[in-house]
Length: 392
Image (cartoon, rainbow, N blue to C red; front, side, top):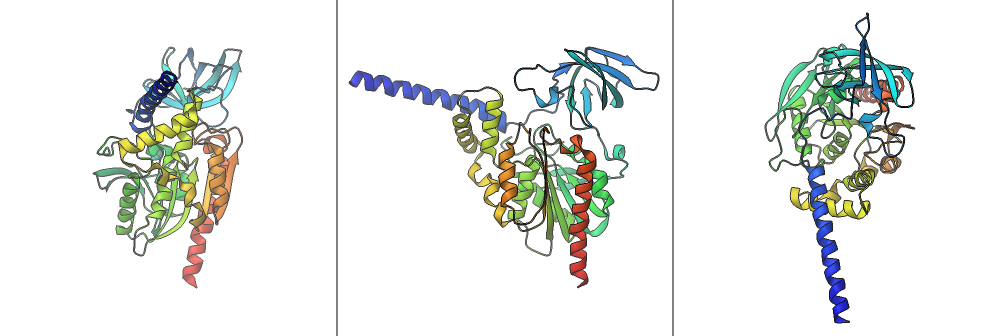
């Protein structure tokens, strides 16, 4: 009996050690920022230049079996960009297809023209600068707790502003360019700012993402910068992890006259642990829920972060300001049920734009007209309500 117990204890210890080792490796994947690079998903099979300056590119269709990476969906419908080594362009409609390939028109927007064999990927980002959206913006540096944070500043009404925070890892300020004309059209000032570990902003001291725990400090610095310029009312807008940062900013809102008016969330990160589990499941790792639990604890220990406190669903019932949410049911990064539950718990939900078949941070790409119309209405109602209250 003692031998059997000893064997069982030994096996249990080995399993625990193996799980801890895998958790360490997986925690590095979720904590360590990846260098900005193309991360290609396929190669351009063929490229044909057209007389009007556009190109027809032949792209490989993704495999029919298994989960297709978001950036490998060469036949995705909507407004998307194509990034290739050395350049980028806007993807047009499908003009031809067979069982293995799809042919689409591409309008180059920057860099060198596409060439056959170039590594490439489909991307949600079509634009690289505000000028490509017809918006004049000032390049600014916002003093942050770790150093200067690069931003785009579009001055409008002095007392009203929208603060926009992008998502994690490959995301940067360009993520906001899709919605930028709609934000500017309402008349409020707009600040699109990067936070630590992104877009030439300073790294965190430990070199890790903190999923909103420390990044909120940068958002608070952006609020102080706005307040110095006479801003008194702010709408927060966040993509993915920027959504978690936005909610966290509301829970640590600064003392004083600055007033939060509304919250806009696009595919928001609600709770990191289910996101880790979904990532493990997506990659076919065994015991994804257990692995996510171990990863969360290992990551919390390495980054000195209490991930349980980053579950934004805990604070949803207390968020009494108008909130607009966009999400895709087919999101393979943030579980849609997490966003559903968060939306259901909000006491002042303005609208929840929940789109079938749409991936992470792709609601604008899938239906830009609906996205912009809902966003414009939200901003109009929020700012007009404040103006009317002030008049009384």
